[in-house]
Image (cartoon, rainbow, N blue to C red; front, top):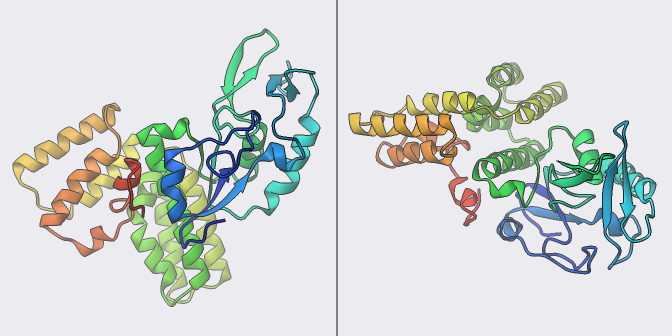
Length: 312
């Protein structure tokens, strides 16, 4: 486990930590390597931790006609469903994490990338058994694998949510006077980008809490925060938040036109969130605005979205 004040991230152990893959290999992932100095890493291999050996025969997920799944070893048709399900259901409730970065296509860890074999011999892509249990138990949890997170837009929102929950963890632990108001202020536009209705509701919680929130305020805010971060990303909501931030600047006519072009490109799906945000960062270098500069939705994620460092 690495020590960090960053988010607490669960990572598949085979992604650079141990040779525990079914074939005895250890893999490397650039994004995991970039995140390691900035997160508190916990590793897991659901198959080894459930008692399987390394190396071991590969497994396949078979989906029955009524929808249930079975994990079957390819060589001897051994059914490992009960063994791996028991590990998932007993281990997941004890996890205290802010996100999970798992191994793609794995029958245990894949996130929407694992082949499920259907009775008619076709396959569909879905999640592995452990990943499915994790999503069911923690529906708000940022969850991804190295294939899904290759997409810059998916990576941006995974990391934005992960680091937001990490900051919540540490703000909540410190509980300095005014900490809840400070947290909400810095995340206003990030929350607006995901769920503007909940963003306003959370603002009301903060106003009622004052500088010394009690347990009821904290619990209400945490519930709303998780709900907001669980909301599906829509480009319209992201554009709304970006336009609100843009209102704090006075760009030239040419800059306004370039910004509008970037927003149209983002709306059409030809560029990702970082492109219009770069315009606001550029404006802020010439017209510094302390309130906008502290917004986590604007600052800090450009480097990680390029797989560079430093991270937020």
